[in-house]
Image 1: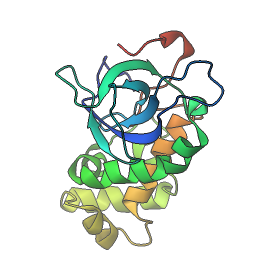
Image 2: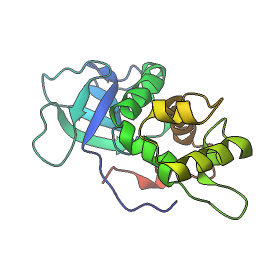
Image 3: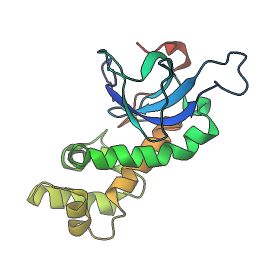
Image 4: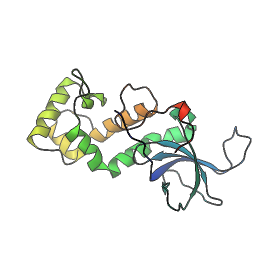
Length: 192
């Protein structure tokens, strides 16, 4: 899915290292974040004296930032510290639940990718039978919440969990199609 250039406004803290990375020869503070809108993984330099708590939501937009001095770069899943990787699934889940309508609309609006595959089949656990049940239910009435999806599509796992698993898989760079994230590319360099 082709996506235009976009920036994050808010992000969640995955790791905060007040003295920098252990293997780095610089001892400047650094934090790793995940963007709220497109799940962009970022490494930032906090403002002098600023501290960040794990899972804290921070502003990273163009206006005056309270805690972030500089967005150093967009990073890949492999660049994350172990602490960041450990908190990633929880942060993804928090973002999905805080923006439920946006993700429920994926179930309401997703269409075919090609003549053989539907976008909803990219979610883990959704095969042809679940797809048919989802399409039938959404044609009768649009879904209003994750609870509504669960109630109207029998034997479907938690929809928020399915989206979270898909986002994590996309961040790891193992997918052919990207629904929720922009694929990471080494040549991108700095976050624009």
